[in-house]
Amino acid sequence: MAIIASIPFPQLDPVALHLGPLQVRWYGLAYLAAFALGYLSLKRMARTGLLRMPPDALGDLVGWLVAGVMLGGRLGWWLFYHRARGAAEPWYEPLALWHGGMSFHGGLLGVLIALLFWSWKRRAPFWNLADCLALVAPIGLFLGRVANFINAELVGRPTSMPWGVIFPGETVARHPSQLYEALLEGPALLLALWLAFRFLRPRDGRTAALFLAFYGAFRFVVEFTRQPDPQLGFIAFGWLTMGQLLSAVLAIAGIVLWLILRPGSMGSSNSSVVNPST
Image (cartoon, rainbow, N blue to C red):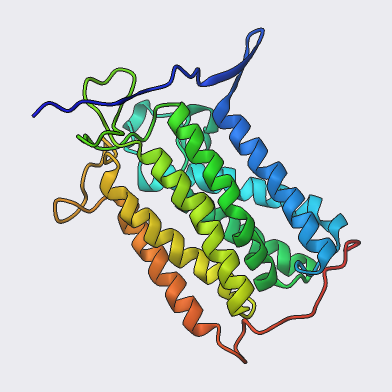
């Protein structure tokens, strides 16, 4: 049976602005907006006492987090998804952000390392910081996935569903898996975390644990509609993708962390406040 799309791909230019020879892409603007909105959200949390650190210390923290996301995301892509070209590949390829290719799981690891170092250096409450970051992270995830759709990248698998989309250069309708991920990793994840935070009032660290568990589960499910990475294909059992493997590990880690951070454990409330002059 022929696969027919009822939703044409919108004529969206991946380049948002042309400033002479400079091209400003939607993907870059998504990152910029995510960092800006995240900063404003964290600043509000600090002012209300939810984030236990002075608002004027946030600028330094966000700088470290940006570095963690960018370097970790690129290195993660190179480690998990890249297939080296051998001698033809330049030595700086793992850090070549301008070549494209970012991994959420790598970016998450980069943020974790940056947050651990920064909280240790500034004597800040690590688990409180992790929880607040978990509550704002869905904003960036949503914007990033929408940018993936605009770029017509990370497309879904062929489908006969009425909302299938024929992406540029394609002749068959595919799942708009980028939008599935945008909704699940954005509004759905944000709602789940805030409801849990509001009604369960978890101790420090457990909101971050829920973030790992929910994100891992959502991503694992959505990957069934996403086209496997062409350079990898299915890595096990004829259906498991690299994204599913990494997300399963993430979900399990979140569940284990939730169980570990029980009352009286290392995740208990910490009243320490970072010194902005440190």
